[in-house]
Length: 112
Length: 112
Image 1 (cartoon, each protein chain N blue to C red):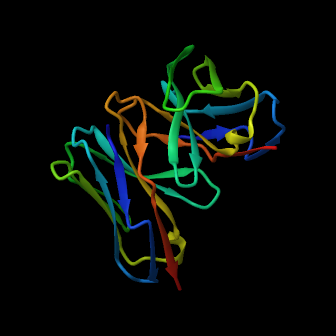
Image 2: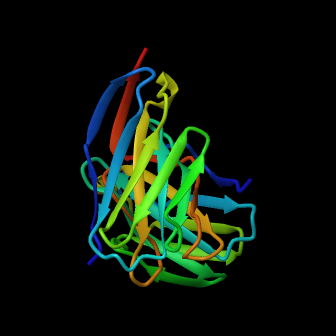
């Protein structure tokens, strides 16, 4: 079974802090994704990566950056956290963008 | 632009009932459609993936159908149980095939 893990289930940070969310998958998938989920807005794509060191912006990349130095690990970085970044963050991986996506357990981030 | 709609937004049924969840999409040129389950505060669990060439997929008490021409998919749950209570989401790849576009979900409550 594919396993996608995220570094934290819950995080509380202060406005202006730099925040790192990490995601690791164990199935050698080429593609990895970061989404955020908000009530009433559903899931929205922040960034995705189709190979090591390769990335593309999703629908809502503002205020975020990503890093993929190794195939199995995809990090989401909030350069200067703001209260409107309080959300549930979900990481996913897939063999191909046209194949099944597998999700991690999510990180509930609260920015005070 | 692809849009995914799920109706109803919420559904309450007694245990043992068979039920159908609906998903519609505006652009029929999809590669596949995926159904997920999400428990409160948790990540997404993949239930079924239907490729565009398929008309249905089955897993245990779940059966998902796909009608591309009408832009619809249904998830049929047989003999519902309280453990089936969760939010069910459907998703299709975007036109570029770079990420999934999600519906807002149907929240199912099965009472014993």
